[in-house]
Length: 250
Ligand code: ZN
Image (tube, rainbow, N blue to C red; front, top):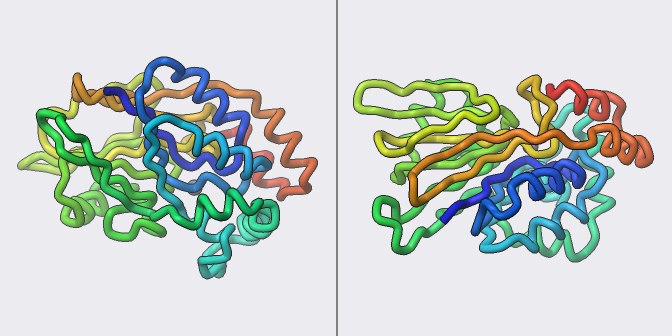
């Protein structure tokens, strides 16, 4: 079984379509780690596309909660706030109903897998699924105490990376396109990066594929028509800085 892992789509339908085309025929299930909406111009289209994916486990993120009006918005900067308010208004009843029943953390069950019975999924971190960013080995180490599974998949920071905990150390490594890791020893926290708003200076859409039979994970990037997403954002008068940053991936 191969699982397509996506996160932080942020209403970027063009990027999501590119990821689904690139990964076509290479997955049997999809795990989506939250932030389907916020920032981007096509929140309803993205929610509908995600819902239609096969064998889906889907989390919500802080931006989904914010768009639903379920989060204190004082933590958002001015541009994010403007985009959140626009995104909240733009959400239709179907998208709202779907997002409302999602949680920011979940356990994915893997019946019949020889090594793993389940995988931990969290938008931010196992300790604080809504807000915490795992960007240092120290924070990763703390978070390994907050779940018992061998593998935890996270989103939220928009930075593809992994943390590896062995008996002697906790290492963290940033991940570039094509990096593959074997998950046979120790425990891992992996972030596939962001589909719709990458922030690691690579503007391409990011995703990961977890191959359960081979116990391997691979990081992927795919180019998409950034100017098309930018034009759609312009049409909705979304903040200039959010439009520009897509081209730089930061
Ligand atoms: Zn996000």
